[in-house]
Image 1 (tube, rainbow, N blue to C red):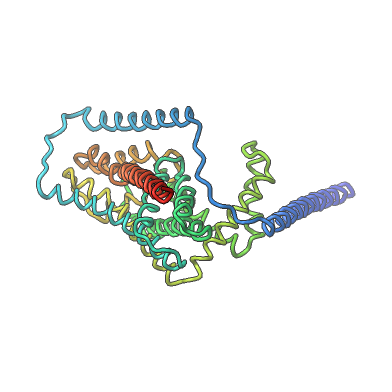
Image 2: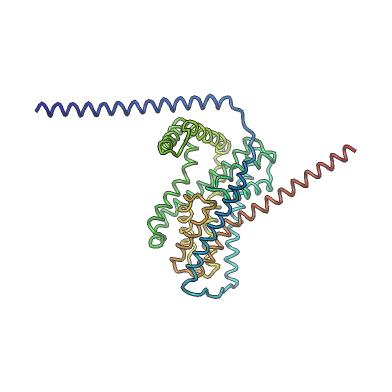
Length: 409
C-alpha cells in the first residue's frame, strides 16, 4: 500500500516537473520572440525606404544548366504522352472545320481576357494611388510579371521585376511596391475562390475521374495558395502573432538542418511580411477598389481555367464546359505544389492523365494547345514586350544624345 502511494506521488512529481519544464521552454521562446520583435521594431524605425533594384542575374552556367534541364523535362513529358497516345493505334487524320476554329478562337479569347483583366487591375491601382495612368505601363507590368513567373521556380520572379519596372518608369517607391503585391494578393484569392466553388459543387464531376491522391493534393495546393496572403493579413493585424508563427516553422526547419541562421531568417521573413502588409494597406483602404480587384482576379482565373474546354473541343473532344472547368481547377491546385517553372512536367502529365481517362480523342494535341495558351504564350508575349521596350529605350537614348549634341553645337 505504501509502495503504491509512493509510486503515485513520484508520478505526480514527474508530471509536475515535466509541466514546469514545458512552461519554462515556452517562456524562453516567448522571451526570445519578444526580443527579436523589439530588435525588428527598432531597426524598422530607423531604416530608410530602399530604392528597388533590378533583380540580380544568375550565374551564366547555373542559368544554362537550368534551361537545359527545363527543356529536357518538357521534352520527356511530351515524348511519353505522345507515346501513350499513339502506341496502340495510329492517329486519326485531323478534322479541322469551322467549328474547331471557333473553339480555338475561344481559347485565344481566354488568353486575352486574362491579360485584359490583369492590365485593368494595374490601371485601377494607378488611378487610386494618384500615379500616372498608362495603359502601356499597366500592360507591360502584367505581361512581364507573368513572363518572369513562368521562367522562375515557384513563380517567384514576377513581383520583384514588376516593382523594379514600375519604379524605373517613374512610379514612386510606395506605389511601385504596392501594385504588384496587391495584384499577386488578389490573384491568389481569386483562385482560392474558384477552388472553394469547385470543391463544394464539383465533387460529383471529379469522382471516378480523379484518383483520391490527386484530390488530396489539390486540397493541399489550395491551402498553400492562402498561406502567404493570410500571413500578410496576420502581420498587419497582429504582428507579434505573425512572428511567433514564422519563428515556430523556422525553428522546426533549423532542427531538421534545412534552415541556417534561424534568427536571421525569422527577422528577414517578418520584415518581408511587414513591408507587404504596409504596401497592401495603401490599396485595401478603399474597399470598393479592393472588390474590383478581386472581381477581376476571379474573372481572369475563370478564363485561365476555361482554356482546357476550348483546347479539348478544338481537337474533337466531347466534354461539357462545367466539367472541364472543375477538372482544370483541381489540376491547377494539385500542380501548384510543384516547384518547377510553370509547374512544367506535372502540368502536362496530369492534364493528359485526367482528360485521356475520359476517353476523349486528340488529348495529346489538346494538352499541347492548352500549355501553349496558359504557359508558353506568356513567355512569347513577355519576350516580345521585353524586345519592344529594349528597342524603345535605345531609341530614346539616341534621341536624347542627338538633342544634347544639337544643344551643345
